[in-house]
Image (cartoon, rainbow, N blue to C red):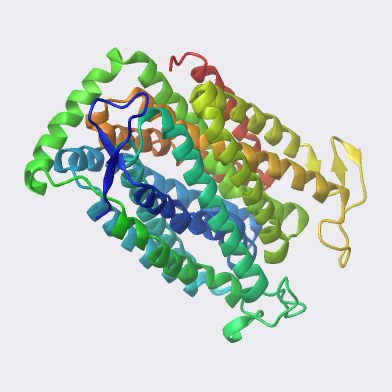
Length: 462
């Protein structure tokens, strides 16, 4: 276990002890370990592959993926506050991270079965995706709850931003690994680096895309180990059975107390709405690009790397601004950028930008050679640059507003508000896309989420 050291920092309680630098850096590695799931599976490689090559059409694939995302989000929403309350009563976080991390590893590894053009794998594949999503989201709840014991309050923003930035860097490296060495263009049989895929992965059956599932599981196992070995956990305060009883009682008390904590309740409501919009935007951005421009793994993956770089830079800068100007200002600025970006994206088509005709992409025209592709790339980088600080500052604002002794419980409520309607965005996108057979119409609904989130955030006092 890591040795803690007393930090005579502003905002620390007298005699309070915080974690060593080694323990903090090891905690940060959780974001590095978990991020490839969001980068490779839910956003830039596997989800677009599923929509384009496993499902019958991109619109149907976007719809099915939305339904599966919504179902997993509903499970997470219902269980997160209960589990958080139990963990606060019990004290320990690591056993929960290990249990749900195992679900992430199992579910993501099973995604290897997703062969192209095989309708029989669609349902098992979506179930595996749901299991992995539940695992990674629950593990994140308990990992977030460790933050207040690591650093004093005035350094929470920097810690959160550094964690998100580090995660994005891990996502970038995982994308480079997949695009440069594993996933090849079926037409050429070569990876982004002009190589034959390692391990004999077959481009014709998209084994380079499908390997992202097992790779994500292995990556998590390797890089989460420093957190388990070197970051101190809180000691167990009581048995799980007693914790269950006390946790549920405490949760009921917290829910009754929320109306008196009006600003905190308003923030949780705002988080519920804008997180739904952000998750949906990231989840369907690659799918939307695949359907609009005909991008495949190389194009979408390269796009993803640029977004992740922007996200890492944005999260790092946002973490510093968080400690200086406060998390609410960072959240509001990030949401404004996201809102404007999604409006602009809806005005970009393969042969037009802002209703002005441009030359459409042509086969063999080069990577992002068409004007519309360049515009989408720029807007995507703005989304990546704003998404990182939005998420990092949101968990910082919760820590600043919630009682420290019930922090996991409130992170459970945070996850609840982030997930209780998380099925709404994907389901709306799925439903509208299915009814209209238009990906653009499905994505347009996200404008409402960011407008409502900004309106509610303006009423929060931090």
